[in-house]
Amino acid sequence: MATKEKKRKNLLKILDPATKWRNPVEHAKMGGKIGTSIIKKGLSTANKARKAGWNKGKKVVSDVNKQSKKVLEEGKKTLSKVNTATKKYNPASDANKKIREKEKIIKSKDSTRGEKAKAKSQKSATIRKRDNIKIGDLQAKRKQEMRDRARRRHKAWKEARKKK
Image (cartoon, rainbow, N blue to C red; front, side, top):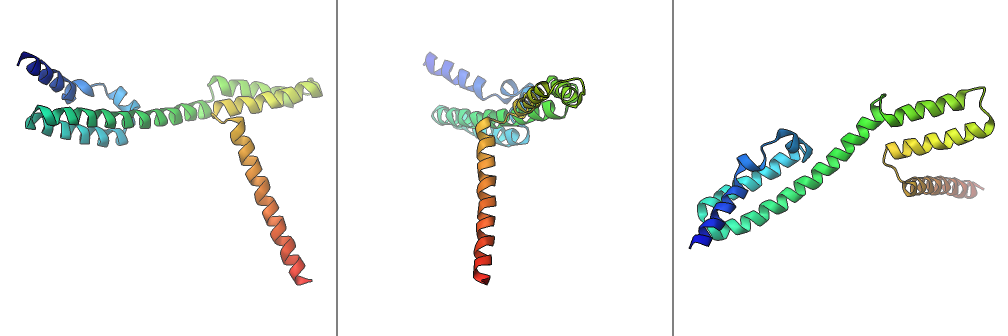
């Protein structure tokens, strides 16, 4: 009987909204509005289960855990977008400083053709890293653009052939 009571108290600690989501910064990191709706849904279900009894409480804890995992995933996506935007639009970021340095080299009359070519490729690599774009993504994008142009040319060729 004592162990059941301990388990029930532990469950109540887990389900207590005041202890789970106290820090607003952490809450913002976990997805903002998306997170709030999922968390509110989970906590309201948890409170109902707390009133209903222990067996339902176990199921609700697993539901809340699943929902909090969803919140964390959404939060990670949101954070990566925010970090990327911060790096991209902040003129004082390290990546933007490096890009400006490479642009100076490219525009400089003192640097050689080799230095300019190297600076140009380094600049594009820095931009790619800053924006979290992989080389494979660029290759796929360029391949798709090439295919689209080929389709347009082929279509134009077919129409020109029909006219003859």
